[in-house]
Length: 416
Image 1 (cartoon, one colour):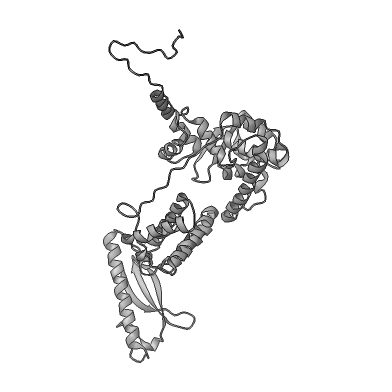
Image 2 (tube, helix red, strand yellow):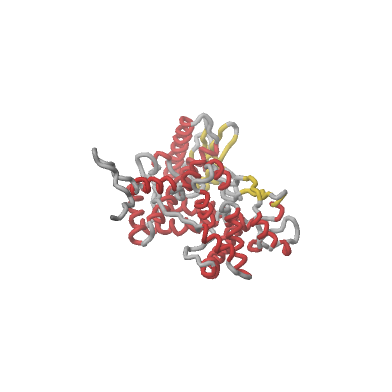
């Protein structure tokens, strides 16, 4: 059982009141925001002496804090077999304020510290939209299913965004709420998501890649300089099962050993190796003259970047990818006579489209580096069309049954 006590802690010549939570001989402290002198404090009775000018009000405050701390401690120890003093402290006083605005700022700060530039830049405006929608700071208990549904409708109709973007606004609300629960800012019983509450359902989107003819035209297009370079990046991604652009740009010469590529995917840190196709080897040959050492980057976009700064690295990748996509769209696609929106991510869709109905899902899971085969099934379902095409043909080409005594009419009757 945790013990909770009010103590004086000497700090810079003052004696601030603090709540001390002790469990297993380890203590955590929460400062209450009031200073008293040693002569005004009754250690035995755990209260301020009458000589203090605000003794009555301050003692009522102390009693309230002690009661709250004991309640939280008892609640936690009822729910869990082991509770640390720090856990009790987090329940009593989160690391920042317990309202949405404070926790949302802490959530964004943690994303930045983790180097998650893409998520940070995407979630920051979504949080801003919620703050503007509500118009004031709000307690998490007041973020109800009804409020979230109104917010989703507001985002879609007032901000004129797609259904997918509107759903993403709700996703970030769920993320902030989950973060606040972990921080002890709100009880999980108020969580407005899940069964019987707010359900998040993403709309189905159509994914399409380049067809075989377009791929050949892209490979054979006469390109030079930067245009040839970005075409190389796209094809290199495609040749390695639609490798993500962030992983392509991070590749080093040391990743290639014994005619195999060994790399760890940045998104989920899943490692593995792939055979280096002949077409990929021909691309690598174009960059060997620029190799300085075995640990040098293969492609130039991230040279000079401090990879220890994850946030800056992701930001640079985002900027470089935007420039690459612009070049693909404006300079490469017209030469290759491709009408589709040519982007680096389209290489992943193109590989999936080429692999549909031909490669077992278990093999595709390894190629895509998916953690779960369910993810592979969901992704590949966007490109698997053979069964539905065959079913459609079977119905439309179905011959009518002949009636009794009648012969089946010929599909190509001979003229008289």
